[in-house]
Image (cartoon, rainbow, N blue to C red; front, side, top):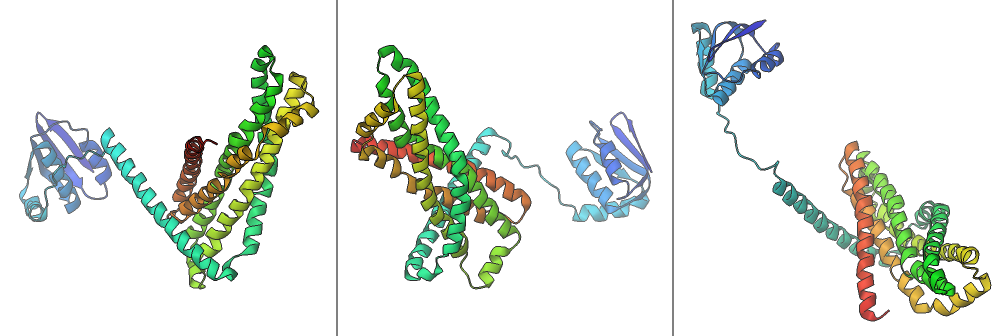
Length: 356
């Protein structure tokens, strides 16, 4: 046991101070606001860990340690080997440091991602020379999981979007007596912009997280190392099936999204604007040109490639702990959705320049 008394600017310590009662001693000493003298003459038993703490405490408080003859020898030995720790000024808590450090991490991430794209290009070139490395069964399974299983949610979501667009547009079109132009509003907005974008965002949240979690767990359980030990290329087993299946699934889902969105708009046009289905689809034949349909479909392979690549990249970036899996899954979803929106914006600018 120990006892601490403060008399003016002096701290008088008595009893025993060892590693056994060190936590309680540190807690008591942390309540001391100021001290010029630390008196340990009445301490019967003390060890080196306690002396190191007292030396640090004395340095921070600019105080002097006074000890008895029994403890003086041990105190001098510790002082001889004790290195004074200087308090360095750090800016880790400052706002600008946090912004700069996060910017550095993002730039590093982009650099590593471009390196990952280079690896994909190299291995993909090798795939053409050795087509037997292509895993058809893995591709078909992934198409079923990420494509076919997403049909219900894509159909319902895009149908409702078509309903919402048509309903919101019908309010103004009624005022001007331009009911038939509901066809232009729904068909062009769905096929050119909203259909591909909604499907890409949906798969970015649904598939990217799945890819990252799958590869991340395999990395934690060292299954990727086992694949390498077996003489197989992880890109052939894990990356290419996902990219190819996404390149197949996303355009097909966009077709479904366009059809369901137009059907939703046709129903609202019939019940809200009294536009018959015959008139709707007759107008649709004139409005929906090949150029408009192509402007929507030309973006889908780029969306698919980025979604699958980001998911795989984040999976390989996962560290061998559970916390890293959750963190990278969240980041992969955010990054893939961000990439989809940026790519869509770039295509919009390019289409404007091209006059499409």
